[in-house]
Length: 184
Image 1 (cartoon, helix red, strand yellow):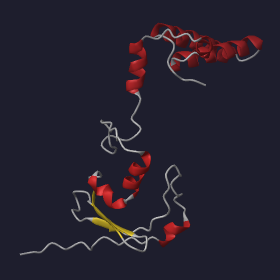
Image 2: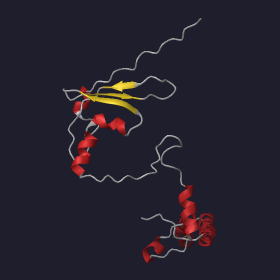
Image 3: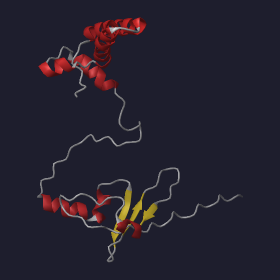
Image 4: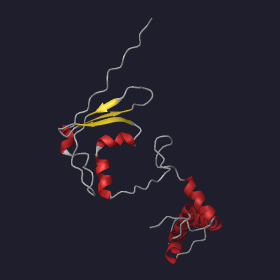
């Protein structure tokens, strides 16, 4: 069921008022078929007014909402990631290379620090492990390192699941111990 806004604000207000009146009448009356019919008719009107979506309008491909009303709803929705916690992608890059060549570059972990600012270095070892050094948050200032073992990578294949058995063989080096401040 679609929940896009397709009812203008005047219709929404009318729907909320009429729906509330019908539901209230049905609740106060409390018995009989008229009470049930009142609630059954008022609830969808109330929902239509509160959400701005009318299933009948959807079925008939009708939209009485103005673009400003639709945009106001979109802009009022909360972000999917809390403020300051995500990365906003503001650019698009076209890579004019064959997919196989792009995959070879991307799957060579030593290339990642070239375009991932939070990585200082990645070194591959013969045994399938790689040593990663990442920049730590400003508060600690100490780089963090890890030595994970690679699982297989192939173009178009899904990434291994987090519960992959090879993950248990990965080793992470603990962060260096914190130094106590010297007193003079």
